[in-house]
Length: 274
Image (cartoon, rainbow, N blue to C red; front, side, top):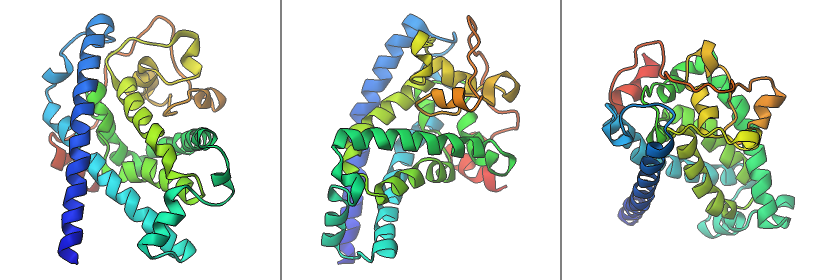
């Protein structure tokens, strides 16, 4: 039995990995072309980055961690909160959501999920800029050549508290996991977009949807914009809470963190605990 479960686990890892390959190739190609046309900052192409290997490790390993941690937490929550421990019970409980939220159309559940998760992640993101949690989040800010592939550079603790825990909470609250079928790809593509080397401000829509320039200001030094623009998707949250920053006719040009950050995937995972 244990062997069969181990094989199923490895199969799941393989499937997740191979799903990432065509997505990565497509995103890499699209942003390579777009950055030639409208780059925010001159310099190396993304495939010439000094720390490309580090970013590739994050890009392919962290999603695997995220997938199984999310599944594990959903199973644990169902057992602890609702006493559901069988495979059939879990499938029935989570398949189409449960409770009042599951009664709404899937598109409306998706909107509720996006708005609620963005609100929660806005405040969690601000919390990670406080001294106690900063070292975990500094890993994400350590990329000095910011580009689309930097989007996955998150320490597992940061990913867990800043994203996975929010997803699990909203799914346990009753929203159908089916919303992730379309929200998942949107989140991956949008996260890559806001980190891409593009000079797009989105003009009058800059308050509606986070764009590359909006988020690139967040990756600058704290006194230049790094203490602003915390919303993952909807900049109106920054407008409401006074953290919106996008100076007219000016682009961010330097990224990274003040404290020395070790090079390499493994060293950066250890860094916050030193």
